[in-house]
Image (cartoon, rainbow, N blue to C red; front, side, top):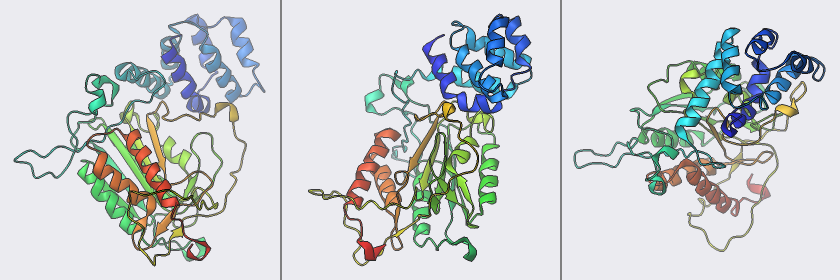
Length: 394
């Protein structure tokens, strides 16, 4: 099997194990001579013999079945009516060949505002040249982001929480929301803002976005501004709260936009920006020789978006965990803090993360890819950590 196909199967394992119906596949796999009867029996006896155990073993063993194993497996899925999974794998495989990423490196996502022309006042948007200067001779190493608009951007801004939720009002979040609404509008996204959503309404808003037809678009952005906490996970840590105090895991949010839930975004970048705490620990930072950002406003009292860790119910299927980013569904998640730690928000100027993110995007988006931008954001947040407030300022 080609290395690209092998990596695709490994990174798709969580979704395949969750959704694959193995019983109808046995005859199809035998007919196409992908497996022998003895191999099928070994797969059926895997683990406890449950559907999940059989599906996992099938995907693992598929890697050993030759260079045409994946396209033949996709055909078996189509033969057995599992068209959604077949379409997801076929689209991901074709996109991987089209994008030709450098081995070991993620494909760059380049957020490039248009350069104003003499007759253009510069309202912003994407340049039709989507690769930074370092990729000019290799444009096929970058996602093509030249649709107009580039894509949808949904901002969920939870400020006012129900009294019985146990969460405080997130003063300053409206400042974050407006900064990001303006920034992504300048990057030529169609921006939609939804405020003060319960957990159920958050999920419904995300599902509605995923079900739209994104065929003519090149990207999708989701921004969530809320309280947050730690949560059990396989791939993406953390959870965010609806205004009713009920959590929604980041993993669930991301998976709404997988190949099954959002096929028209297959092979296209899906970007998530999360301003919420990842837990209750406080990082007081460390001394640095100098800073490039202005000091935080004197007299301000930064707040946190933290709530205690909540262990989810049920068991974690560890063998299916995938720790690398981006995933085969072209996912990029940017958190405002590390898992387990609080995220600081100033009631007067907004969160430190969004302030830094907006500033970095304004200065560097015309010339750098997203990963480079977020490295700059991380450096800016370290500077912010060096000015973390004392115990009486939280």
